[in-house]
Image (tube, rainbow, N blue to C red; front, side):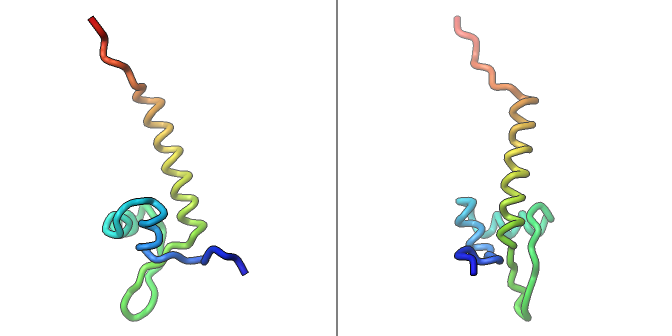
Length: 77
């Protein structure tokens, strides 16, 4: 069996992304990060593979942004 669990809690995802659980919840609720809701209390779980895909997608979006908005240093006098 794999050392990495298949499903992660929102707190686990927040730790991986170094952000808050509230931010991860917002990503899930906006549909940006695929997740499932399980149990009577509606606990959210994110599949580890989906998290990796999300991270790759964010790298691609960031590259596109950087390519379209090149960094320009302020002109010096």
